[in-house]
Length: 111
Length: 341
Image (tube, rainbow over the protein chains, first blue to last red):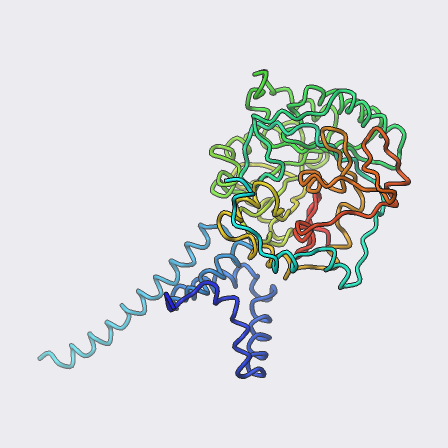
């Protein structure tokens, strides 16, 4: 194996059912219900959320899949990039908000 | 790189993408329903060189229908009132020297005339003669042609990526000018429809949602109005097929189209209700078959032209299909008038 991630592996996702079909079937049914149609959110909004999560979770399979899904839902590169910025700023915010914990600890430790 | 030197399509892929076998397997038959539209490709000459163009049109192409061919198309409209519309395409059909005459004659016969207008041809000088094409918007309006124009997106990035640098800005000016002549404006009856097609190997978004986006964005940003948006899937032939094969995406794209096969979309394919005419007068089931040099075959094995046009024989023909037909049957379907399902 030349790499831990092979782009051709994405198409093999369905094969997870070989060792647990019932659970895989339930997962894919759920997946389709959530992402496959407009609901309270449009398919485009869901695809943009999924693209943001793909980046925060650093999943190359998902980034490939949801770049295409966003385009197929009519999104444009500006919207897609903004979604990634939402993921990035959440990561930064999550890091920074923990500094309150640091400050609390400082307050406890410093005379 | 020519198609012949691009990576080969595997035998397994050819088998998977056998459209006739797919229809047979699903018990679907698609006989002709009528000939409501005569779609005539009068020239392959174009002022643009679009990356996805299935015609391989460009400023250097020389193929053009003869005056005799154009007169024969008009005679066919006269003989066959069942053919309600003349759909003139190219290349940029306006660059043909007999374009104006053809439109005027068809309109005199009371036929709907659809012009596949690229929005930039009226700003560029004629690639061969250098003459100005500025007369076109007024001519369209005077003849009350229906104008159908490609605009791959309501933003510059996708449009210029597909159609060339500067095309978006010119297209916006072209649309504003058509609006000024009443095109796309409510109450005028002058129809301006836009065409969206993806800027790569993926399926179009839902037509209604995208139309709403186009209407909102074009009105807000540029004050532009239009009637309808047609979403069209990229056909895996010619220039686009070469791109797919060079970039190693051909089989994946074909598999995507196959996975999205929709029997309802198949029932509405445009080849069931049009005949496509090439510059040399040969008849085809659609413009894509025309570019693949797959002429109509009647049941007695003839390949008729406009000069031996037999309406009844054409209605009995078996429409010719190929792997590219997966493009018209994927998802909500695709045709020169948008979705089919």
